[in-house]
Length: 445
Image 1 (tube, helix red, strand yellow):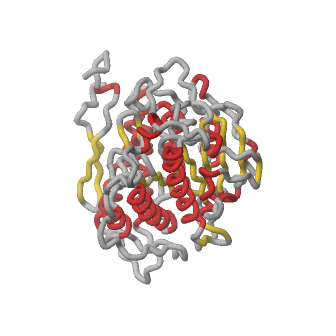
Image 2 (image 1 turned 30 degrees about the horizontal axis):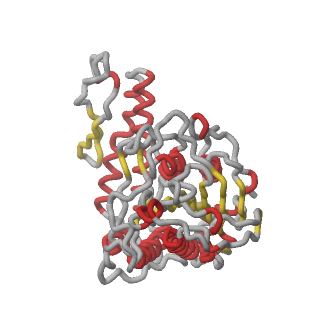
Image 3 (image 1 turned 90 degrees about the horizontal axis):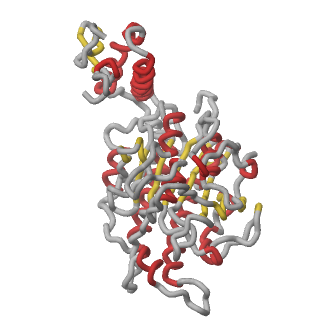
């Protein structure tokens, strides 16, 4: 269009000063080839994900009993204090269809995006946490938060799109300062002073939003769709800024505690991983309890886990490949040792949210946590017989303490059910054999 240029910006006036916001790349800028709670409101329902590598060993992981009150085989004995908060889905599959099958990638990617990746590096699109955050994360200080116990900033299962990972917080000390440093609006403080920088940011957005209708009339259908998405994002930012300009309502469970004196050891031993996981969990719990965010992600281990057992020469991943099955036990003892440590941390994660009182229940009662892995049987790196875990009642919408047989169906059915519970209105999720369009009635109230 002749009257629009790539340098076009939205201009507005605010308190006597000019403000500008640049436009996103539109088709009309390109060539023909496109190359150039005290208020009485209900408790918010939050969403979390938890990820780990290397699946499990079925004969000592999968309970024999289905439904409620399921038994706890050796690898999940640590769940005893929190079993009734956890739903365990077994005998699920991740179907690669006609795509390659890169180990440690296909399984978790399907569980998080619904689509089989084309190779070992690609991500087909946004992950489930991002989809949910777009639904419920628009008014909190942080749209979502991601943390890892691996001490590796590359360890994430969260992607905004195919090329944009959400880098995790890896340092408990830095994470604490980000959450509860000078910019933290303590909901239980007697006084409240709005941050001037937040006021300016919100004002800039407000100063140009009135021009959007005129601009929308000047562009084509595809550009209108693109602009609508762009301005929706700006409005979401404005809502987040507006929230930070109000004094938060008091929250009884918000008790940030003291900052860590120093970061824990950053080695890869199971003991250090568990300690970092515990510290990051405590920070995520308080971030949610203080309503700093309503979507969180926790990484216990990467897909090809490199956790180390002191006194044993091989890391977890190598162990699953090379350790022989003990004829008397019927499984790989060291590989199972790693799984048991993983499940102990999962139980701690669930228990930490269950320990915080909120309203007439707990923080976990108003959450849904979705946990995935990359494989089923760790030894053979299978994409069938995969476990999926959930925890929390999602504000009373979900039953808990259930063992559910997926019957070989796709892992995506659990993820799709989670999205529907969180208010994502989509008729289906996934592609090809992983496409699902019905929620799991067994887990719904």
